[in-house]
Length: 402
Image (tube, rainbow, N blue to C red; front, side, top):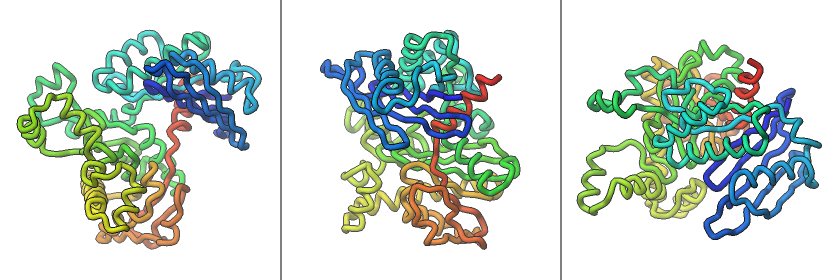
């Protein structure tokens, strides 16, 4: 059974085909410059595990034309992987915001599409694009092939009210649904499930802190297989500092800056999302690799950004250990989490009081599934490369089998 996994952005279309008989990758690709304002053609890059690559330019005024290019790459190009798209059994879509409506993945219907669209006010950069991808899929492939929506927020629906509510007048929750939603849920679910398998234990018997560290970052507390808290909140800007996002802070800072600089709410939002984080502190870059190089070369602002990042991560991990009354495993995932051994070591050294001991040799392995703590460590520490596409494919298979 082959699953077609789709992650649609406003001008991009990422995809993978996964054979669920052995969960192997069949191919992956990216279409970009969809609907380019200057009228330029789009691009597709399509790759297979055996090293074949197909690239082409084609008119892509909408996602529907992008899907047509994908079908050609899959079935007719030099890097073809099937004779017909009919070999695809189901399509799984990544959807960022499911709000309080979608606690689980679900079959896509017209009503579901409408609900996803209604939730766009909570994720204006993502949900409209996700809907574009879904509608284009329906237009291109028809309604006979089952399509499933997998929500970034659904894994966090088990968070209790004491953790998802904000201490604002209750009427704002009743009127506008203001609450913590959390994001990166597909990643947190995948790595928490995988580390339990890695440890040979039932996830229902474990307390796990999962750290998804990339350009966007979040940490989750997963107790007995369920998420009980996460750092991202009403929007992905909440939590700790990221590539360009500021994370949690005194809201009065924002009102003070707005008054001093005569800024609109949209301008403040732009500062918090696009100009802050390690970029804002370093005045240099939002790329963690460049930041490390700059710090090692003596750049004090780059070094400060790294120190702040590590410190804030430690604070959240520590708070979640307290909230769960202990921890059995700490997991690092995401581009930074999987590839920055110095950051992992720095973070874990702060938990010496828990008896955590890092195996320096194992820790210097990058981008691979590995236990980086010693056998006598008080807590297991792991690197688990996240695989959100496989998690989406698994949910799609499970839903369509029902």
